[in-house]
Image 1: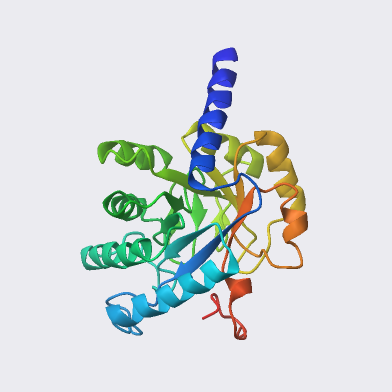
Image 2: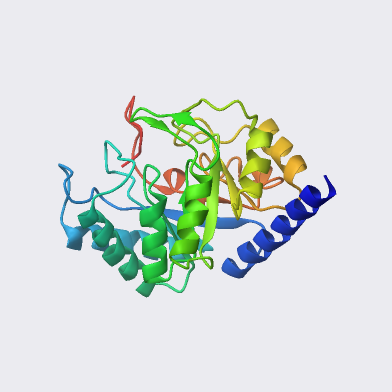
Length: 268
């Protein structure tokens, strides 16, 4: 019990140091999400030049707004696959390299739905600071397929490609899914930390839905000073309350213009 507790505390300290090395502050961190237009093979693929032009425009807007970092994501590759094609892996390398070259902000990447290998590969290749892994310790059912927990495989692949300097930010009880695991959200948080997570991401149930405040508070009480990010639903009306317990947030929808069509999963 003492050994396990000591390891938990050590994991906390290492992850806090890793988080603070990426961002200039440990609290009130805002990470702007840059959603690439559909990649190759999808009906609305606009071409590589258009994707990067739009992404750089978003990057500049985030910079003017004063974000602390950005994360790129293939959000509009619908329906999502568990792993992207080799062509799109190489495209993500090129796109991410352009973003990295265009900013001094720390850059992260998420490859949907749960392609941690591509995320780590791109991060290592381009010099990206962190990745997001939606399914790390929970088993979930999505509209695409059932996703098994991947924590051990993520850490093993990270070691194989010598990418230990890349931080791993992991969702627990992730949005757009039905949780099949029996873990409570606090149990998932502790498990994620023990398996090598460098920051926990807590979301609502869908895009634009904020985390449950009681769950957020309970996770904070359970993990101490370990970094927590809100992964959905943060806006001007709730950010102060959420940041009582979270170190920061990944934000996109509330900063975009346009109307949400009924039944639409993502705001375009």
